[in-house]
Length: 282
Figure 1 (cartoon, one colour):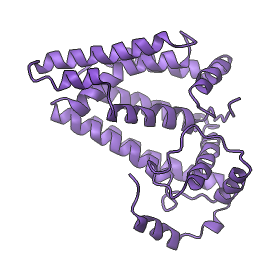
Figure 2 (cartoon, rainbow, N blue to C red; figure 1 turned 180 degrees about the vertical axis):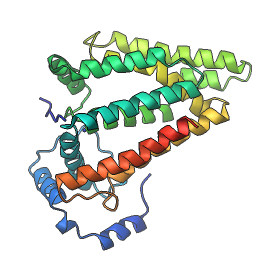
Figure 3 (cartoon, one colour; figure 1 turned 90 degrees about the vertical axis):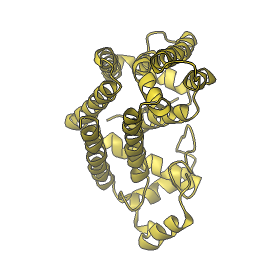
Figure 4 (cartoon, one colour; figure 1 turned 180 degrees about the horizontal axis):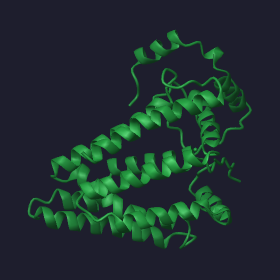
C-alpha cells in the first residue's frame, strides 16, 4: 500500500567537502531522525536519484526525501500554500504555451481538471492504485509532482522517441511541417500509453491530456530551430532543476526542524518560480 502524505551530474567532491566542513550533520535533528527511520527500512522510495540530485549517498538521498515529504505535508495544510503552487503551475503553463505560439486554453482546462480531480477525496483510492502501479510510494507533492511528473518528464525529453528525433533531424522538411509532425508523434506515443491504462478517466489519463498540449511545445523548444523558444525552455528547466538541487542541499535548506525546512522550501520556491514566471512574460 502507498503511504499517504497530504497537505509534497554528480557534484564535485569539493562540493561535498565544503558542506561537510561547514555543517555538523549531527545537529540536524530532522535529518538524523530520517536516518534512523531509514535504518529501520521504513522509508519507501520509487527511484534512487542520488547522483541526479547531488547527494553523497543513497542513504543521504532517502533520508532527505523523507524530510521533504513531511515538510511539504506541513506546507500543504495551508490553503494559501496550495493555492500558490496551483497558481504557479497555471502561470508557467500559460507562459510556455504562449511562448510556443499556442493557445493555452485547452492546456489550462486540462490542468484545472487534474487539480479538481486531485482535490476530491473520493478519487484518492483510484490515484493510489494508479500511482502504486507506477512505483510511486507516497501521495506527496514531492513524490507525485516533483519526482514522478517533473523529473520523469525531463528525463523523457533528454531521450526522446526515435519517431520524434527522426522528424526534427529531417533536412528535407520545412520547420512548420516538422513542428506539426513532432506534435503528431508525441500524440501518438501518448495515445498508445492511454490505451494501456487501467483507469481511462483517472489521474494519469488527465496528466496525459496536459502532456498532449505541453510536451510538443517543450520538445520543439529543446530540439527545434527556434532559438528564443529554446532559451526559454532551457531557462525553465534550469530553474526547476535549480529548485530541486537547492531543496536537497544542506547549505540551502535547514534539515533541523520540519517548520524550518518548510520555510526554506517556500523561500526557494518564491525565488525560483517567480523568476521563471518573470522570464516567461518578458
